[in-house]
Image 1: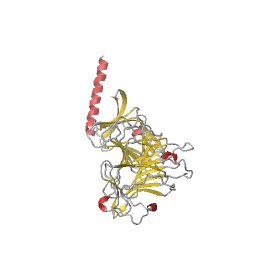
Image 2: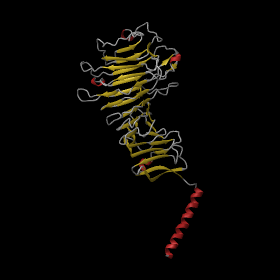
Image 3: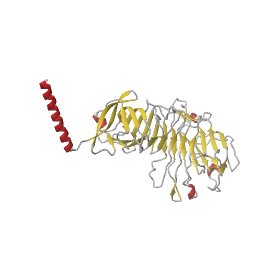
Length: 430
């Protein structure tokens, strides 16, 4: 697509090497360095456009695309690389750069055939541009959609090994002194791989003043098929899951690392046999992740507080600010990796006594219970274990009970002593 209304969808005559860029957009120029490029020049898309037979192993940039109807979309179909041999250690990037679509515009990427390449695959959602774009354009959130009907599949290489898949929102760039706001990545398609799946921000600079990063959201109706490592959230990314029709985001594991958040948009998003790890990787400095129920309920196999380096760390289970009953039900609670238990905390946030419930299939020992911190109930309450019936099963509920005031405690002890004496007297009479 070289200019507005002009499309060139023929296969490229050469294979870009590692680090090279191929462009779809306005005034791309040779190697994307056209000196006449203006940020206000856009290819205006009004219907569905499919660009196929793209053979590529470097960076693929969608630049200067503008949608003018709700039916506008672009479908990129990238071809396999198995006819090329010089592809070891390379990666594929897809970058959105200076596009002007709104939240109704879809850019679909059919990556089923990417798996033939050796090297990891990266897909970026980059809002704005490093060029001096008009300030009014910076607040636009450009979303990247993986539409239902496609699948993101990574197959093993020639040696039977799987490469990693990275789906990333890019970091903030400064343009005219204003920080860029990235859009969301909405995944309605199915992810299938035996390799690692990383969902991430491009870096950990999410705390920059004025910077708003988009979320990565699952909303499809077909369950992902993942390896034992499941999906891994890194660098403070926020991932939301609202899959439909019983579909689940992972039946193996959700690893929530380094300040990242996994937020439910519906109940039963994670498989009953899956693990949720609030995990502190080597570089996170004791910071795990946040598992946010957000008004919904979830049943899982294992809740982990897990640290790679040998140190104390913390993770958060957030019941959310709401007025509905929620249940987090795990078969087991584990302290994993090289975690130093003394000082480590499982912070239970926004817990409402009598409304929210934390269930386990097993009775937890004192070492595990010592990590529990019910935020807002640190003073005047103690953690208690109750055996209750839930969905036909006997489970251990961990909740709170008020600690009596000292004066009241003395009265209760006196009453108990009198009652015991009465009982003893009655037994002698009998």
